[in-house]
Length: 269
Length: 256
Image (cartoon, rainbow over all chains, first blue to last red; front, top):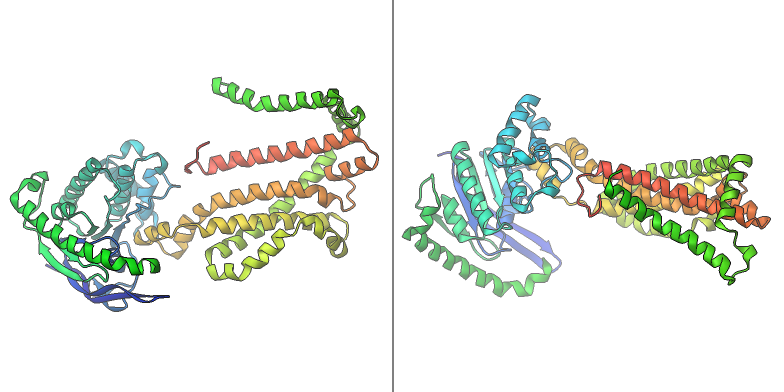
């Protein structure tokens, strides 16, 4: 297994008027090629910050974030990001949104190939009927699929997803999870998923990184004992239930720790 | 025209008919001296008389041209300035108090100074209208631009966009709505300022016409002038709204 991404003794702190705020503290782990890493922890603990450093939006205060062996210098098309708020471009049609990355100098392709790629993802994401609609006509789930299609179109080897299904209803959410598993099966990508749902983490990931209340440190790294392809039946398995109770307990402990420390610093955020 | 078209036309026309009826009602009620309120049909007759014999079209053209160029120049400068102020926070802290100071000054108050420095020709009127449209436009621009979320820029970066591509493909489309709003606001303010600018010894123009008419107490001419200003401003705004609707089909609006 080749190492794709590495967090090497990474810490990040902000200077605030009330003093130094440690967000991430001494985090080290590797993400191998083909891994599906889920990062789970109480909300506001710094897991998004962790992802944002690998995406290239923030730099660690100390330590190194490496991608393919080199320190991350900024965002780039080899690391696709699916944002929590989707960020579909409202002024472009669905098809133009998917084609956006392919019109950029960094990954320009000829028009015919661009059309072929767009059609492929329109079909895969069930958006063909809306190719020429504007995002204002799409539901939340469809916008989410559009954001995923747009990120996939430039063929990143690595996907960073920040609570991508958090805002969806239960049915759409489960549909999207299955779709993601299916797409990964055929396209073989490495994924880092930020989530606060224990079920989602176990159902999708090959490894789960449980992080502590702020500052985010690694509480435990857990290997998920299920292979791929997966389907919903694994959720009925006793191992699934045991793992779920175990991780839930860890996350609840950290959640309580977070609540206890949130009050005095909540204004400085 | 289909059913909804007819409905909208009738709905739009009703308040105008109402206003004319009210106008007649006030005139005939006896509350106001009848010689102080020319009847709508008298004003209409005056309108045709001015149009055919007195060259009303020249006045309309003179005023429209002043507003057009004043707004054009004002917005041409307001767009880049407003953009920079909205985009770079330090620039805003630096320029904000000064812009608000000048914006608060009514253009009419500046007329004596404008006469001293720019004379009484077209240039002076252009300066006043430029002033009015620049300061109203620049505020709309920078308020709008400063609210652009960095999310779309981040998305574009993760897809591989460079600085030039981010500007062309993200920032420009996000700025267009604010330019159009600035244009509409500036146009409104410029029409409001027109009469003031034409007080500066203008020979032609709707403001000048009203000014001259008031000297001779020609109430019907004043009414014609006022109605013309209102109508032209309305037509310009409607054209701009059509353009906006076409350019911004993607926007989430209650009314298309």
